[in-house]
Length: 317
Image (cartoon, rainbow, N blue to C red; front, side):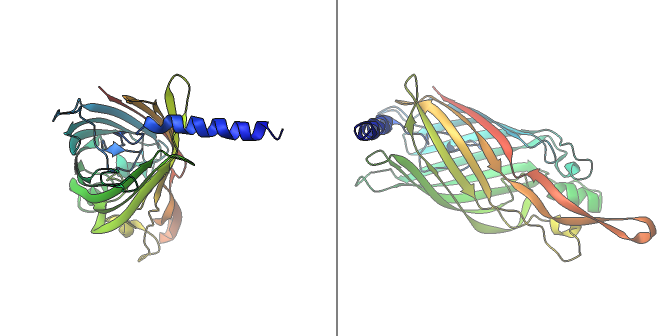
């Protein structure tokens, strides 16, 4: 037994180092940027040496939140430029949820998303420990979710919104002993709640995001990357507090979390398959309807999205 344990540890160490050629962040997020499942990294869609344009990367993502919000699907395409920049487009497609009271806040087909990113400092550019640094933007338009729906309820006029993010991300892929990892951390300024799915934020403010993953060797020359990510959300959405009870109380939108596993190729990866669980929003407050005799009946506002299933597939030619 004393010999088998060191031997197993040695084999595990060798296996971890075999994942050393993997760049697990070079696939598309829910909104089409190069990154994890929900958070962008300081990498872009790669171009071949001495080539300006990359082959495009395409992606598909699905998030099962049908109980209230409604299922979300995104279709992405992103083009890289000289390993220094990328730009892409995402069409988000949405289906109606099953809650008779609250799903009407999301009774819309979806929205459009454009993003761009520029790498200021490549990972390890001067010294191995130096992380990559990138800045980027996201613009979403035709967003009618929550805020637009409540505009229509209050005024009879449906309004669509444009919102967006500007962000900076620092990312380090460490492929050395004792344990390879990928760490990502960033700051974004946004006026969108839950990537626009939660509507328009009440102001443009700063939010943190990040993630951590561990590349492990898989069968058939694959790498398996368990990872977790977070993205802080604006605390509430425009118009949402107006339906909270008692009057003057506020809705509360928590930090979005995801726990995912990415399967990709160990060398020169051209595909990635993501599957995982997300924590979006559950009980965000309470509202009231007028009952018999004018007495308010208090109803909890539960979005039933604290444990949702998601999957993604991205391909790079």
